[in-house]
Length: 385
Image 1 (cartoon, rainbow, N blue to C red):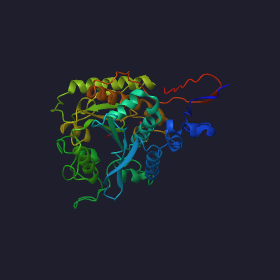
Image 2 (cartoon, rainbow, N blue to C red):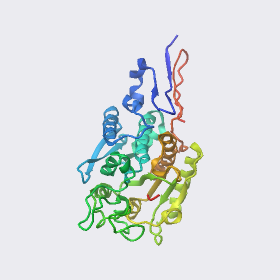
Image 3 (cartoon, helix red, strand yellow):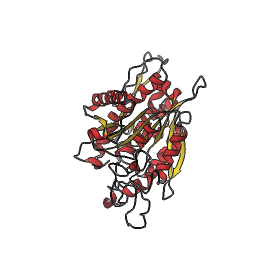
Image 4 (cartoon, helix red, strand yellow):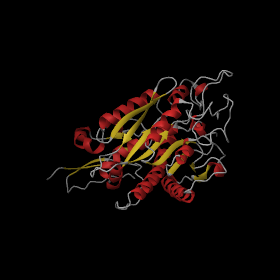
């Protein structure tokens, strides 16, 4: 007999902790990435110190794919750090960039949970999926799990701070109210519609465009590589929406029809996973007018594809989405994000082999030892915003 390991991992849908055969973990470490990314609980919300530690573990366990880039400091002097996911291009060509950020609004905990889930799925899937591997050779995906680090930390203090939305910058001289809505602080029709100049309001846009260090960090980094960035995805909650530029009702993106088409394809992929409906349109069409958003800014500086994902739900729990909804929310959102990224990649690299857009969301994986011919199988089959 020839001993063959047919190995599938199974994720418990409640705990998402991995059931595995520890005797053979070393055999598969190169295929599956760091064990720390398997043991991390992706179906719970995590405080910032745990997210920082998780980022370190992902980089340490997957050096060929993942690196970390600190690119800014918050008002309270915390690092704003992204994970850069990408493989070396075998032909030495310049790579393009996909931007994904989460946690610009502090109380929207499902957003950082998604960025962690998204990273985990890439790390665990790419070596067994040729299409994903190909995309990672052509693209670098920049993932910021939490932009508004100070605000996110503040939401973990106690129940009274849980629904804090803004940053934690000090109030202007005539006020006692802290913080700025970072998603109204970008230089995109700043201060015109859907904002407040009152620092005590949740949609306070700040004293000037990009007045806040967190917004400035994003603007400087993305702006420095604007010619390489193909797509800008910013993740929020709630409402189950895919929003495209622009938030101002009198301005339309030059590629509006294509943005709608790609967004609707993503919504269709989302619906396939758990049957959830996501509405596609501009903010004035499906929500309300606004200005100063990072999504609008990204499109204005020339990034062709720019979207806001508003994850679950539609109002029952809103920003207090229960932990039992983290996994299904992230599974469907991953399918939608992957649909957009795949479209954008294939448009930029038209000579690559076509592939059907698939959801890599993991439903179940089991560990099996088989005495027979080898068959390697991988079933892979989260309001004022």
